[in-house]
Length: 184
Image (cartoon, rainbow, N blue to C red; front, side, top):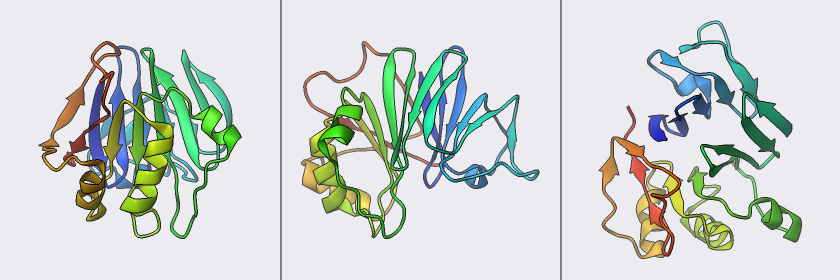
């Protein structure tokens, strides 16, 4: 699996069989091929730079798209690709995200967690959330809150990466790792 960052909170996840776009299609500046677009509360428009036979998931529900299962709630979208369980967190401005017992159960065994940091969901709130979920790998949006979050996590030496290539076997097992990706 390969993960690249296309916008502030927009990522492309490429597996052997699928190209999945996570986040707002409006953030895509260059043409990109995608089979599945997970774009919470977004629509594709005629000016979109996304090409391909696209299946759009933009609302809560349970979906199965060519072997990719997606469980979507208002606050998060969980999906499995190549045996890896990913979670794309959706916390809008002004939103307060609290985990109840049921939501924690729905977010069990997350391998990769995407988190958008903002003033509404700052480093402190994100840190508390991440500690409850305990993903193997964290991919935060690159914002001024990233350094604060890395500090809270005790990870000051995280380098920006162009892209991330990984397999299920290559995921961290003991300690969570953080990958901050450069916008491509």
